[in-house]
Figure 1 (cartoon, one colour):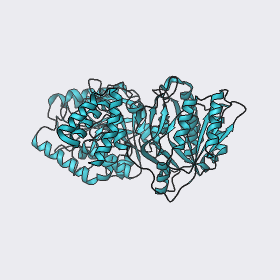
Figure 2 (spheres, rainbow, N blue to C red):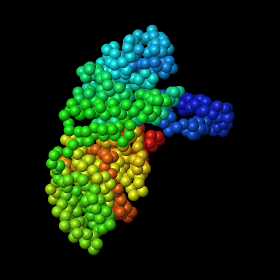
Figure 3 (cartoon, rainbow, N blue to C red):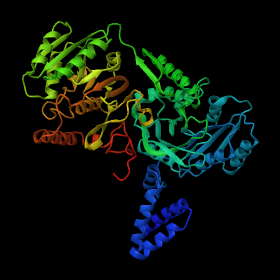
Figure 4 (cartoon, helix red, strand yellow):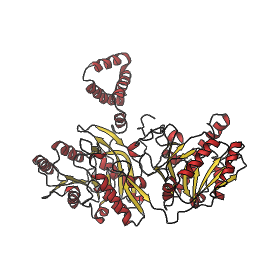
Length: 610
């Protein structure tokens, strides 16, 4: 009861401030007289919940009354790198104060002032340097912009690790402690990054970014790790720090060059908001298009990365500001792709599917294998006869009860292609380059299954990657979002890794399909066989990938109907149970999602009281 009273007292003052009147005070007194402390507590909770935004509620649920003072065995010095230039006294003070309030005390703040002309800025810096010997400042005589200034700050650093803090941003009080704590868990880590949010001119927090775990293809698409990022200083020194000419994306360029010396196993993500990014007029945090040159600088940095890696790719601007599109070139002789299409009857949907492939596919080397599961419809049988004139279309008969996994495994046995494409008979191709794009990724050594953007007939999203744990097993990212939505932090507009993709349109090397023994015929005859297949690839060390540059309609379940009878319901429940038993731990912690986001819905909302 005492804890509740203390907790509710804090919330009481917040609500009273919001109300700017004593009306609440009298309501609380009434609640106390009627129901005692417990009644007053319930009233505070109700009033408080009505006043707070979802993120504010999350903050108080996850960050209030948490101590960050546990003793650590390993306490390396962390150097914070900050360039300044004519920074306002208010923002500069907030930034430095946020460092001085760190619960982890083994830090140094290395500031390089880039020839500020503002006396207010210079006076503020001198004041703080006199207050704390851990604050080291160099005053540059000539303005060299952010890359040169950052290097000047780096020259002051003596820590084992460095991290980067913009001159008007702020650190959470426990930011460096969490970084050090993660290093105590694994001293082999070379790069650690955290979640972040934004703050306005009054330090009000909003727009949290709960990030994916290490997601290489997402990182090639945008600098999603951003803040707060800690890197072993020896690596930063080995790549010679920041490069002039990449201003606006200088940190992205630095991270890319550092990655060449960092094994993926040495990268960690902390699912806590440790950095507050200042969002004011003219800042990139408020509007990515505010500084157009940042996009070009990011493309330039990524082009350098692939050029030095000797990979045959092209890099261009992505669909949104500060995003990239990486295209992997096909070999001179593109491999044969076998498109497997299970079907039974359903002439209209099959006709639409086959016609769209034939009319819109520009990929030069593919075959279509229609897997006929005992069709009896006369119109469909007649359509089969018309397709026999095509040299690259085959129709194979499968005379067994419907089993999606078994039918496709049967098709793979007869496929001639080096690449397998699983294609539902109720999809319709929109993009002419769909197969070119998917195969270009599938041929990459480290990539497993490749998935596509699928839309419902009403122009809403049916599939944009699979998130594990949603609804117990898995759900589709951004399901029902409007077609042209950007998604959660641009995720609907960038190539990225997901744990799984749907088998409605999936491309994979045949060798990998066979390596993981294909789809599970015994336990997953209809549902989740694609998720299980992708997780087997993940378990083998391959990354599954989703791309928004491949678009199809998915007239979902027209050919099979819904799970609406006792037999289908029982079968579905058995498949759910199998997935939970086999992949229990993985389903509870999707590496490409975030534990602070919902496990009930597919819209990336913040998880509150689930």
